[in-house]
Image (cartoon, chains in turn brown, blue):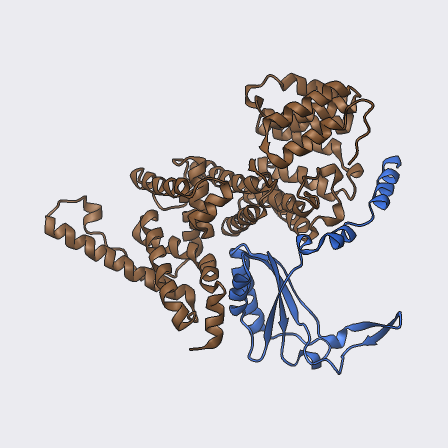
Length: 430
Length: 143
């Protein structure tokens, strides 16, 4: 046995190969079998075969082809077996399925198309967003159910069940394995982008748990976004989303202090931003802008949010931020995507550009919105404006209320610290 | 995690100024780069002119000393690099194994140091002098 092969197998080489190849294998099989659930099961069986074989034989020269061949063999067995059963029971099946035998030689033509079909299928609107996210991480990123469960802080059986149900729903709804066309494409693309950004956000500002961020999830979402932008290079919003995520991810390492506490944008050391990611983000935004201009359209919601993030990225210091441009971008975003959350963010920009009084008026105007009920950032933002206006007692109350509304331990601490800092006549010892 | 894949081409330490890889290799590299892009792992990548077009600045006794290339004593030199973002060192190795390298070339894998890798005192030093930053901020506000 080649000692170097043993060494690499021992070091998670199979897992690495799986990470690189699994989506392509599932996608190819799904096109051939017309069944995403079955394709995933066959691919898993091929993985098991590799786990059995490779530690002894070493990783083959072309591990992707090996896995694909193993999966195809299992698919052939599966379909032969089914035919046998059908014949025995003399069942009159549906015509389309009775004589169906996939063409396993029609593979290597264009795997990119298959991957794109797989993304659209996994993110089909017939599934709940949670199911879409779990299925996408499983099928496109090659994550195990255990990894997905840990990422979303839910028990593993919950994720496993979510995936089983999702596959069943896709089969029952007879969702075709294809890239939507025409009018349908825009809505379906929005569904894909939503899932990727949901995964990113779950990593970027964890909704629950002890960690304020889970960067690994951000990396998975970025990888997905970059793949999508490569597969659908003419979709401006795909580049817009990538731009948004690259720029936000560039701040990841500046967003936490030495003991894991959150550091707000204004206090971040901008030298610690990842300038490679900033550059990639600005390039992706430029690409989105060019594509929109060529199509005669205007920036979509992700590109607009990326443009806002870019305003921060371009400011070498917080005080150099172009808040007026940010207000204008939020105006455009609010028109496109009317939402109290966008209004809240706009109010922050207005405060920075035109003063806290105007910002406070805007916040008070939306404070009664049902969508913002229980949203901790509303009192947090309001507290900030009140503090700027010198209304410290009111500000303290708002920070305390915000702390009671979030489940993230790190955020609670930050908010209570801000509240404590406002006690009159009390010097805060840090 | 991020890794740099460093290309060490055989004999590149002796390459003449302006030496370039041939079209066939460049075409294979382009294909490989595309596979990195399509997998969503590519962050950055560049090729470097030979050392005969570069220079070295070495430090001894507190003084920089400049030597123009080529560097006769060098046994291996860098020809280019990629920066990739992957899940594990094993995945970085798997990508390196797929590089279309001519016979005798080497690809070295090195993990990028992240801020979290540093011990507390180094983190503090890397964060810079807060007082200086604040001064700069104040100055900028006055502008």
